[in-house]
Length: 146
Image: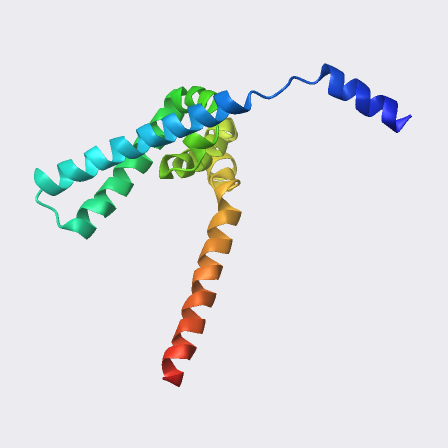
């Protein structure tokens, strides 16, 4: 019975287009990176920011653009076509925060937006911050030994 069902599911399931998916992810992720580099160069050359300041301003700008495009509904369209190419860059982080908040905005600002803002990105932030604290503590211990 299980074997028949598996064969049936395999027969009716759409076959993924790996080459197209990989190509689109590469192109869109690369395009986002190129846009980020252009923004970084503008902050460095026209904004007269140092390397660290320009990198920080670029990250903030890309997060804003990702959140803004999510609010307009454009980032979801890009994500359907690009897959991981739109999720991996920092704009994907902005999308993962804004999307759940927008979905629940009809429930109000506190119980809707506020409660669901970090629904997807929250675990990533918790484990990322926790890991960085652990690594920093280990580094601190090893520097004391020297």
